[in-house]
Amino acid sequence: MPTARILDSLAQVTSSQWDGLHDGGNPFVAHAFLHGLERHGCLRAKWGWRPQHLTLWEGDDLIAAAPAYLKDNSHGEFVFDHAWAHAYARAGLDYFPKWLCAVPYSPVTGPRLLARTPQRRRLLVDAMAALCAGNELSSVHVNFHEHDEDAAFDDDWLSRIDVQYHWRNDRGWRTFDDYLAAFDHKHRKNIRQERAKVARAGVVFRVVDGSQATADDLAAMHDFYLQTFAEYGNHPAITLEFLQHLAREMPTSLVIMLAMRDGLTIAGALCLRGGGTLHGRYWGATESVPGLHFETCYYQGIEYCLREGLTRFEPGAQGEHKLARGFLPTFVRSRHWIAHEGFRGALREWCSQEAESIRAYARTLAAHSPFKSPDVGDGASSS
Image (cartoon, rainbow, N blue to C red):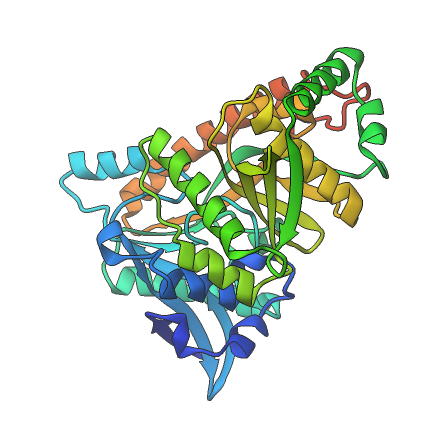
């Protein structure tokens, strides 16, 4: 049987060992991304993030792994379990610490069970539950896993779903005009008006990858990020050093849309690309221009995908306003192992009711598709 080891830093394995367990299509599970978060001040124990990566070994060979963290709170996860924590507290039980298998601060679907065979993925899942119980943790959570990883989980793992809004080019669009032609008249007109307002304001765009971004570009993007978090009263975790690291170590994965006016950079959106998908992560602006947010975060990303031949654009969590701009409802998934059998049974019913409500919500969203021919039938795409 393989030997399980918990690593408190990805410095304890090489990038070739870790990245040999996945196909490289998702930048968020790359060794460079996850280790960069650790090295450059984005994860701190006082913020509730302690790396506890699960690895399985046969001798000196790493055969399976899962990015995982011991959590003292539920911040930065995007799968909300605050009600669960409150219920534990009311019962006089400790919900924290818990064990989380996910990518910090990233509500992005991707592989979580890094292994080359279904059998080894199943071994990872069994090891998670056993280690959780053996260490007297309340629970283990696997957030935003891929659809084909569902088979690794047995019925003891509770299933949750949620809805995000994703752009998909499954109609062969080549230009933005091709894309707009698929909209009904009302939504097509609104998008054209939004883009015209930005153009009339004298805003133009530069799109750079990590190899093209200057030190000033990275500093400006980080300043935009800090400003947005300050406006919403949130704690910023991503450091400038981490962005500089991404530009060095993952230059083709990092994509930044920079809005310029009168020679000054006034807004930016930071994205990562991989496996035919563009992932929008952070945005910010120093000037208020009508339509600038939509142009920077959505329309520039769609144009980039059309130019580069990418077929998906995932601009982040939440936001019903994305639907009118062609981002259709898509289900995202998580799995949860609860050590306390009584709570596990109660939460199973809770998860079932939640899923029913979310599916009904997705069907409502589908009825408001902006396209002349709706792309979805049951409410949301399954992937």
